[in-house]
Picture (spheres, rainbow, N blue to C red):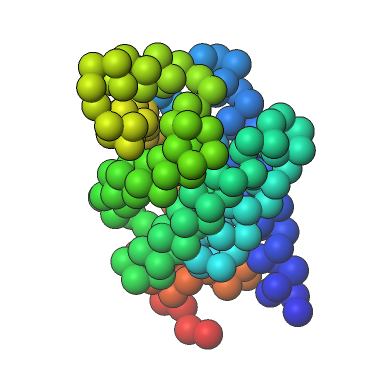
Length: 198
């Protein structure tokens, strides 16, 4: 029961990170950087895919109520990120090089999942600067999926690896005693050269 409480508390921290960092990033207007899944990646890499998925879903649920209802369907993308990162971390840990590879894979996976949602519900438009490129590609004769996918992958190729690297650095700063108390995955603990036995 106590471990589950730690896990749910960590999920709440992850949701708060997603919302706060996304807000800061959008107001600073940093190109191709969103930081809207840092909390999902952090939670998933430390305590696993289930809680990563919960963090992703709750984040989009809250932002859809606070910002824009159109964000709710994209919870599927956030859930996918939580599941994928959780599986990777559980198997390989989350050192910097693993984080970079994971981020690059997410840069492709996230648009692959998000683009069909955008096309089905919103005609391929995202309601942001990427719509300009999407419109240009459609006018140049590209199919709608390609036109909507290319801008997303360009944006994600910077955001996702950078988000994963930040999480990897954060994990290395978290006290080992706290990781053990939260019941972080064994591979993550081992990657810090710490012996851990349930």
